[in-house]
Image 1: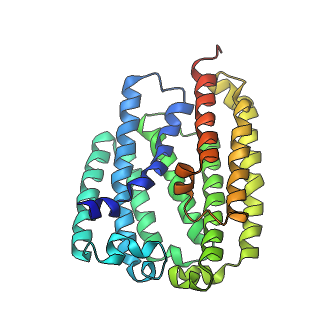
Image 2: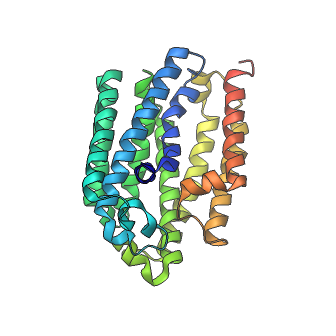
Length: 291
């Protein structure tokens, strides 16, 4: 059971916190029924994403065995058999889809698209340079969109664009960390890394970094957002976003970390503090400060 739990990668469930973002920034966090729907949607995505991680590990057994850390994963190390992994993924998928259908047809359709995209990624897209990271970015956009659908609010274009740009930034940063950290074993772990170079990834990161910062600033100062959220103080959250971006760049370039953005967010205290302060400041601005 412990091996199956590890196969589900519960530490990666933090990614599904994006499903809750529409609840907060749509001003709906004061409604109990909306909170319940948002939490259910998050649980569903945890089940579905764990099923997809299991399928991805099945497809990557050989490559994971060549990775210094991933070789200890349940499938790569032989702790879980391929047959048991298939059954485990099927059970997770069944519960997730059942819950999605109960929530709403539109939410279920979004989940189905998420599943299709991730299957396509595991089988094809992860082998295509640049498209591999874009596919990951779209999976985060689908999470954010699903969060809005779950509570029956309009999905903000600003939110979706910011989510995509941030996911691209983290994705290219992860690729750079993999390429430089694994050295000659990089292509054994992920074949598409042979088509990247540190210089190319630095250029891609150099494009996405200002895009994330500028787009978030435009969002914070937007008159449309100000009118919708009934606040003009969202710009106060900008410093936390900028610091989080710069801290991640520091970890990539100076400490050669970044191979797992999720792990960094959970273990790097400065980044964790920036995220907590960003959420706390946003909540105070939206729900405490008089409009």
